[in-house]
Length: 555
Image (cartoon, rainbow, N blue to C red):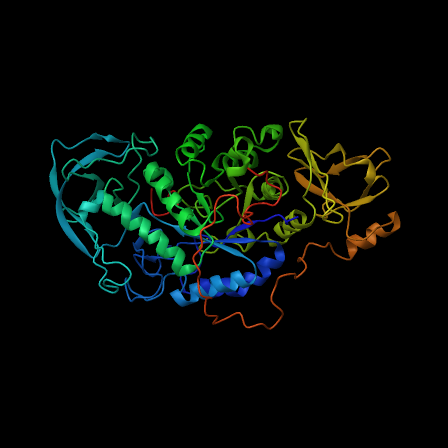
């Protein structure tokens, strides 16, 4: 059977703007492979409106760090060649790569234009607060002088947008709907603020046929150019849902059913997520924002939070095959617009909840794994996450039994798979005082000695004759009980803990040998292929999944 697959978001908001991030990916890819990561989600690869731009203030969709525009040739993360080299390295290691696409807006226009607008209420974009249309000077003309007509001859102007937020003539901000003929906000978007089509900068108008055609052609070009394995679609609650459905269908028709797409639909209301999935015909997955906010609430509420309800009203509970679970990301990290940072004491519990269960496609955050930079740095939690990744890769398989029968102390058992030797685990956690959970792991386990992989409890549990055992946990903590890779006697347990837990790295299967030349690799020739649905197993999904508004805002 296939091993469990885990995604990593390979960036945080304060990655240094030194143009070295793609080189960093090349260097760290073998380490991530050994740690149990199977797919890499990389930040936007397109040219932003400055060399420091994170990629979400997108300027030129066809400039991947190739043309001298907006103050540099490379993007914040590096040059086009370095990007393609990094993807090639990942592919040689067996890692899939998903690219973050920003399709809601454009920033850093080359020229201003004069056109008529109506100003709308920021809290209700359907309500006009200007008496009649009036002229503004807006940054909406994109001519791409550094690139010219290479890859695409389309030049953007105000006809291709339906809103902007700055009047250069008066030097003032606002939300201005462009009054060009019968132009309106796109329908089929989130209804927050009446209509949440507009987010920031020059808002792309997907009611325009030429815009839809250009953006679809660009998506296909991105696939051909980068050889990527999937997309992460940014801010899709602000983009016409009908276009998203068309775009996704076109990408899958081009690349095949194994091309993976996940959308950022930042809405904690489960019903809204379900409605969106219906609209796009379940062709994509969504990040489980509902679960993220449950984890955040649990981390800030201490023992007053009922852990037995942690998965209630979450996407992973109702649509497990379409949920990408995560603990934190670049938007929820400290001091960002959607800040909802899970507190440190709860991080091990949260990661066990997404990594060691059968449902969902879990994503590890770069900021948790490598730490957060900037003026207020946050230390990494690599050792803890590596422990959880080890358990996911080696142990967390098979039938799952839940013991969610107490508000503060919960647990579950994965009974293991015959295909993966010594697999199976018993997880127990509490947000209260020290506790325990009596759980059944199987009569065939009778007499086995299990240890706590986390090292939080440095003793052993012996499985009873009937397959049951009592698994303890420290207060405000989690323990992951497993059968170790070698049989232990009671006398050998202490020495086993002293020797170090087997969480440091995975076997190097599939990893290039030490000293292999990972740099300056020319990407292999890309061969287009189209797969019929069901022809090929989706290796980008977890193996045991059942078949079937500032710049940082909402990215």
